[in-house]
Length: 451
Image 1 (cartoon, rainbow, N blue to C red):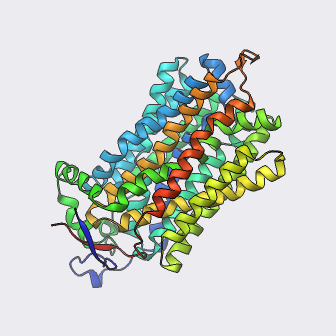
Image 2: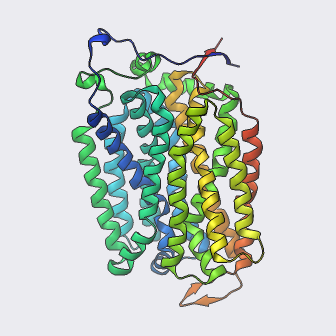
């Protein structure tokens, strides 16, 4: 097994005459990174958009909760499958090629979902979206690594997730209002147009590294040295990252942080709030929006605080404990009124922001040459959460369905949701245990003996 033998900051790459190369203008670095972050925003929007159109999707495709969970889940199934190859491809192809290809494909998949009347083709479109947006997060992190100083990485990671959550926020009340005024199919077509515009911007402006524009690169020397390695060579080495203790602990733990909040705000939160508090769709979306805002705000703050105190575990484990307690209270505390529910939901979402620490901790826990692979693996762990929880809870809802119908649609009782949400609670508790077993890196990239 590979061992961490020391911890030391990784120096920026040494390239010929680097000392004489100027640093890239801040506006250029932020613009290039911002285009990638904008694509990540659209991907997050795609993940949670089914939550505010459950009625329309169930009506137009003539499906129940299980099928709706699978329609939403098709995004996650293929997103997760793509994380390992994308994590390797970004090390051999570079960020720009993946970003341009992914954004063009995402526009096509979005158009297909909005245009088709076939449930099978709608699932195919969601699969295409999942495959194509799988590149977004890794591209955001890779461009942050190459265009910004290393000490900004955790902050940029949190800021990137904040962008994603802005996309999720757009997919709540604003999206619901647009659907009510223009119809969900028209809105999907317009969404495809926006993503196509992002693709064109990426093709015109984004470059992999500042060196391609004549500026100093911030990429570690090991990362620059491996860019000529072949895809199959990198793929063969991918399995080696499981020889590092933190890898598998973080992989399984991330789903227990991301899964519950994305399952709630991304699909089953609005129906649950309707069953428990009798809220209309727009009001339920507003409650989910509060949660998303809190998650978005907390992510960069958690990254910044972790960098500031020089440790990863206190914020990471503390967030997991708080989130698990919050979900328990939200679903099972008796006599909880709506204001108290929203307050607890906000606190739970703030605590979930600690999930961002997993990327920094994972990156520091393996050799630099595996940075793309470990990022892809951890992001895969994130998406396994909603991938399993959304259809799993949908299956339980159908099993617990009392037979009640309203306007041709199934109505699920509060007891059905309480049973289904046990899946989220269980994974949250397991996450606390797993994260307590991780090894602290003290915010430093380790140097490893791979003999």
